[in-house]
Amino acid sequence: MGHPCYVGATEPAQPGIVRARYVHVDGHPSSLIPRLRGIWARTARRDTTALIDAVLAHDWAYLGPDVTCGPPSLAGRHPVAGVGMTLDDTSAEPTTVFPLSRAIDLDASWIYLIDPADDTVTVHSDDGEPVGAYPLH
Image (cartoon, helix red, strand yellow):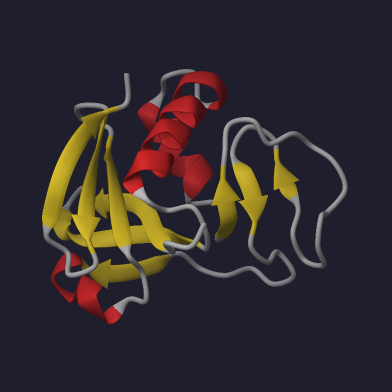
């Protein structure tokens, strides 16, 4: 269940700059890619920009299309229906912005970059190198 990661997108005008959110658990590609596909298909209704907006809204304990609304499970965490469980919503945290070339400075196993131009997710290892691209459909 470990594998912290970051999920986000590159800046359109500066493709080397990433805006992303931290996801605390379950960030391995074998688990997270199907979850992102589910959020894209169900919650974002196949709108990749809406998927990016949903993911960038919070830092996350975990992401999952099957999360339903309900009371907070732990102090500071609340479910966002169809997206996931927030990590800590007691204070507004800005998105993490970093050059992809400095990804090694992050404490994360994986970085996922969602591309609205072709509806894909590119997975990068902890050093920022791409290891695969996956269609959302």
